Length: 197
Image 1 (cartoon, rainbow, N blue to C red):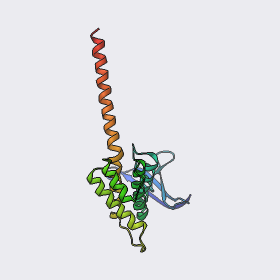
Image 2 (cartoon, rainbow, N blue to C red; image 1 turned 90 degrees about the horizontal axis):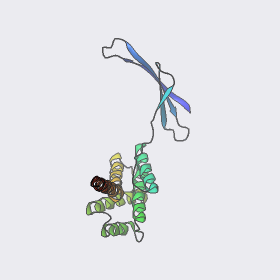
Image 3 (cartoon, one colour; image 1 turned 180 degrees about the vertical axis):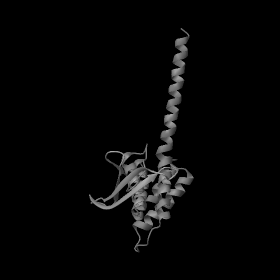
Image 4 (spheres, rainbow, N blue to C red; image 1 turned 135 degrees about the vertical axis):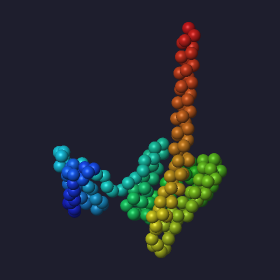
């Protein structure tokens, strides 16, 4: 990677009396995406420490891997100002979630209605993902290329996150809590029966 910048500074103690440490930072541009990578070298220590800079995603535990990967990519798009991409990917997550739950017939609006009728999403989430569908359609099917604001992109991601939370993450959390409670109850019952011997 080519170095595109350098920054040197010294940190002072709280009384501004003496230098505590000297830091030498280097900025490199990725040859593939042009995103910066920053390394920092502390003069008091050996070697460089890489400071992660670039596309920031979000983890989605308990969500099927292919859906979680797309949701993470949507967040990464938002973090690098690829706002149209984040909205279209958020809509794709909605579509993939419907398919994952066996809802495959009809338009996306029909799928949302079926998800709601089957009790897979509550009223509020149905309304949220309907708004996400509208936002995604506006970006994907628009003839004019209007700018998308950061707020619009962030809102679409929030709606997508709520969907994943309700469909996958909350049920998985409750299942784990129930399993732990039942295991503790079973363990307690075994302990009591062994103590009665």
